[in-house]
Image (tube, rainbow, N blue to C red; front, side):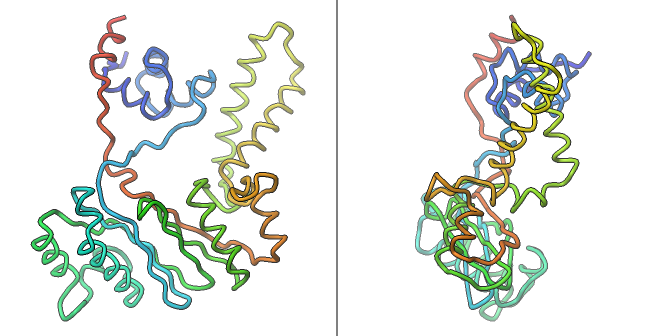
Length: 296
């Protein structure tokens, strides 16, 4: 029998939003396996969906740079929100974004070795650290060529770059970027979801529907339960697939309907960065509450 700690319970609660006792029971039932515990909670209807494991903990900014058919999105981190808002830091980040556009490095290590203003980017970062007084790190970037648009939200907390198959209505392109920032889709369309991803979600929804049916006063036939699952999968697609999502500027239509109405090109791909996501889990003050529940 796996040992379940208060920290384990708090971490599962953070990821799912479920109650602490439910999290404790799920972990015990799944012998401490967190991923299985998340599925367990979802099957019981105790967690709407698994929340992202990473929470924003680091400071910094997500910035964009566009030059013709080249677009860049980059995240650069620092230690405090105060520094992240200074002109000196923001100017440095913009210069890094431009450097990526111009040199097309393969990754962060390759970027650090490129020459910028007569020296390496690595040296430029060290100089910036000395001048700003905080640790600075270039965390990640993406560079895309073609019919592209970018969007920065909340002063650099969220950044998006989206690529279309061909140039089209600029307002439509920008609205898609805004949609991605606001609604955080997983992929472009249903066809882009891996089959094992779909199968896993269907398994969750089927288990949840069977659980509800078993507890109903008048259980429904299996065929009806299957149709319920089909309906829930359709709803799921509308949450995670960009084209199926409700258009944020007109709740009466889907994104795909907006694009069709404006005779826009197909969305090829997109990247969405949220500053600090996944870097470090937020430290919540659940200790006393969790410990008291663990003793129950």
